[in-house]
Structures are given as structure tokens and as C-alpha cells.
Length: 166
Image (cartoon, rainbow, N blue to C red; front, side, top):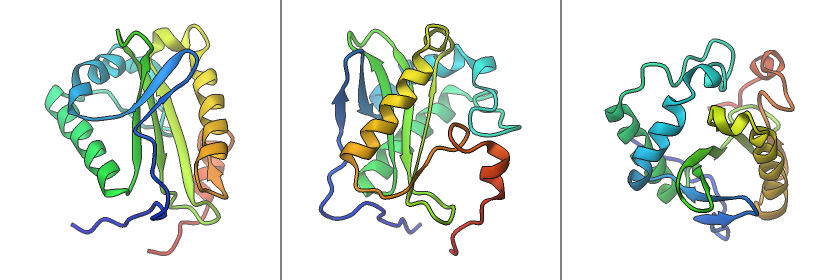
């Protein structure tokens, strides 16, 4: 399988970032239990988080979750995408995840998506994380046009955008 290196050679994506109320850390196998707990405790809340009709995380097994965190970690090492677990500062729980991916839609060089567990969303953390992530991407990453599907671009408009040629 061939992976495309997406990040510029002179840019080192951060492995860990500490904000005022949370910490981002690249996802990896050590995060399995907390990551799985975060989304499986919030299945109903997360339905449609990645588009209309998306059923994730319904039906995800612990084995699926292990493959996913290992895959995310590998893609970070290959510089083909960046997946972060969003952790409480005291590391007692994962609050959600934030993803910086190459964008397959014309006109954008990256896309940012995120989700948070239901208990964090109930206290307004979902919008806090998104706004923080949007600022962080603009300030610290080398992209000119970042897409925020499902946030600043509605899903119908997002799905109607033309894809980049393969």
C-alpha cells in the first residue's frame, strides 16, 4: 500500500499540545482504553458526527478500536494524516478526538474534524474544542485553505463539492 506524504518536509506536526483546559496527544495504542470508552459512552451523541447517515461508533469492537488507533499512529508517522486524542489535563479521561486530514475536495488543502464525548458536549466543550482547533490550525499549521465539514460547511454543501482528481 502506498501512502502519500501530505505534510511539507519542513513542517513537524506537533505530537502533544497543551491548552488551558485540555491536552492533545497523537493517538496510539496506549490510548486504546480511554479512546474506546470516550466514544462508546457516547454512541447516540456521535451518530452523524462524520456526515448524515454515518453510524460510527455503533458496532465498533475493542479489536476494531485497536486497529484504528494503531492505524492513526502509523499515518502520523508516515505524515499522511494527524489524529489526536483530546485528554483532560489530569489524564483521567479522553474528552474526544481532533483530526487534521488531507482534504479530497477541490479548493482545500486540509480539513479539520473533531468529536467529544457526550458528557463533555453537555458542558459546551464541543464548540470550545472546535474554535480552539480552528485557531490552532490557522496559527501553527502550513495550510492556506482548511475545510470544516459539518461545522462551517453544511453536509449537503460539503458532499456536493467536487473531489480532487486522483
